[in-house]
Length: 505
Ligand code: TRP
Ligand code: ZN
Image 1 (cartoon, helix red, strand yellow):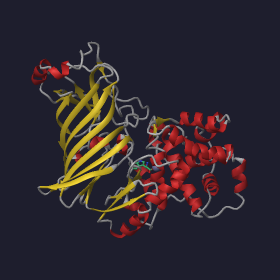
Image 2 (spheres, helix red, strand yellow):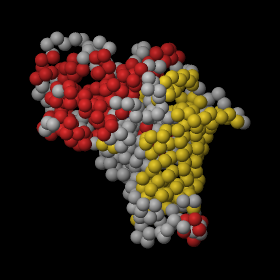
Image 3 (tube, protein in one colour):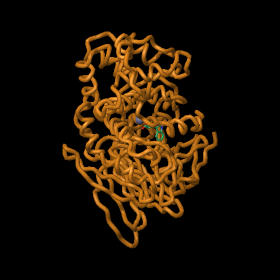
């Protein structure tokens, strides 16, 4: 492993001697402090996130130049040391010019694929609060890790929206959903261009030919759900029935997809209100959606303000994808997974929400869609070899996680009955609001609410690499199968998912 030491060691040594009085006031530096781990301990992505500290807040001050893709930034990170810490990592790819820890200059070096190793002037005591300031710049589109980049330039700007990683290209972080934090994101762009991020637009100010947009997300937010889009947008506003302010943004450059994009995303408030009937009150204080002029085919549940590729609207209005991304606000965003293996809680439930929507639109009931998925994959189809409850990093976004995942949810409903099922659907987002939970936690919760032992049931539907035997209820409902199809038009996403570079760990 090649380490590139950025601060010359002579300078580093002299900095070590200069301990400011303010740092001394924080208590004595622990003498047996050790480096924080370079990963948070996720078996799917061992290098993602970091050990030794927990972030509570990120403040990002950014300046972006659409014509050159140059990004300048200062990140101020508030954290607490979770061990006596001699050194810690941040996940980051841009060029760092200075790091300060509790006001004092720190030395830093890069290592691995995306690690920025920070050595504070003095060790940090377990439980102490830590303020890290990172000054940086760079051209994000020139950076890659494991041979890929998730920074997307557009004709008039750029978009950062990806899963499970997008932060490395624009801010230093503890990049794992286990460490959620609040965010203030301030972005300066040339006048006439907008910057979109999560939460509420606190203010927008123009000066000297540039406009600064100040966004605030005031509930815990995972780093991959933190988004940035720069470009020329039309902005619309609205409120939900419950009074949550909505801000939507549409690239002015969507061409023929513009009308369908707007006809879909403008229904955000209606869909969120409808979902809250199943999932309980909407968990955040802002809402919306944005459609940049990007060539990627995805949509992503970026917190409070999902990202939608224009391709999602190539066949006209697509309310399914709105339902899907908004369902994630409860299942995936407010309640985050503990490890990436728990992805079924995100994708299975967001897909099931699409089935509920389909039923309410008269396009096929949840049972009919479950039967369709069950019947359209014969027993020897590779579909059944992917375990939704632990699909493996390379199959994290396989169709089985979505469709077999939603089928498992319909099977659960048939097994425990509607009363317990809908109590679970609504209770779970409250039980773990703004926190993290695993598939194992869900199993325990479902057993508690239903009063039924479900270990064997979950083994069959989530953890078996074979087609489960048809459950009685599903078999009955199959008598009159409509020509309803799973309503999510997933061709673009599936193609991209399948062809995506497999991560080298
Ligand atoms: N979570 C996204 C969804 O289902 C899909 C997704 C998986 C994705 N990997 C991605 C989106 C990478 C953008 C980039 O809505
Ligand atoms: Zn999803």
